[in-house]
Length: 297
Image (cartoon, rainbow, N blue to C red; front, side, top):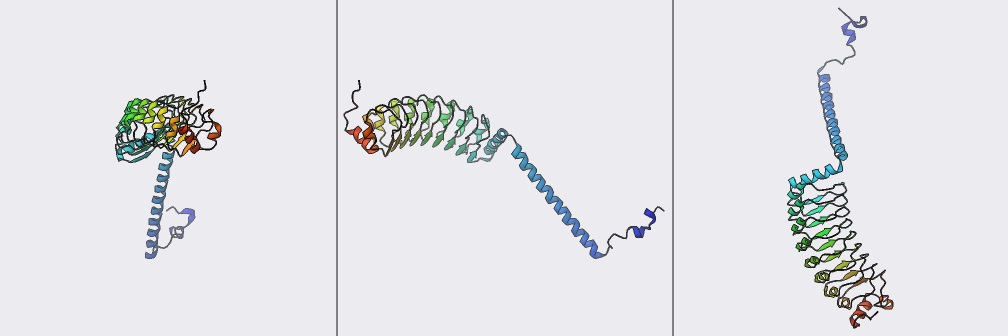
């Protein structure tokens, strides 16, 4: 019979532990512990692999997956910002329970018509994108309270904007708007409006119909004149007209009890500089007392 290295079977196996009852129990415990450690290690590796796969997933695909998941799960809040998304998928219209939607800092060039199906949406953020227009279905967002669409490429607002009758805050700053539509005067509940950094040049007289407006920012809007109807905005408290091309202020502005008026950077002739230097109260008093601006002809 073959023997390794000329040794007997007994001497070859002499290094093995004796198979007493105590040693058998210990071996079973060691084996079970080893199996548990292997299973735990495998679970950890699988978990790390899933996390890495999610992190390496292309941002646009991840954004679309989140939107579809939100629709299926009836989410109330959805944030999909910084993902380079160019167009939300049609499934976004199935998120009927959404109340807050954040699509900031993407590359949105258009919005799908299905966005009009978000009837419960209250807060919508579209800042820092590439939107040049809004779809007609946008007017169906009848529950909307706040809309931030600053830092886009908007050249105009659709007339359907007037249907957002519950809107309280509207940020249109840093776009390419050349005018605000007359329909904006129908936003009866609007309290805050920021149209700064747009080449507006003039304002539609209908802006005076915004009776609930408290804050109006028109900084760097290339304005050359203000409509007299601005005096109808009796609720206005803060008005920022900094860095425009205004040479005259309408006396009707004095009818508003403003707490803050910024006229910095305008080539104003009337009211005179000495009055402007005394602050908001002096400016409004001068406007109220004057019969009208001087004839500069």
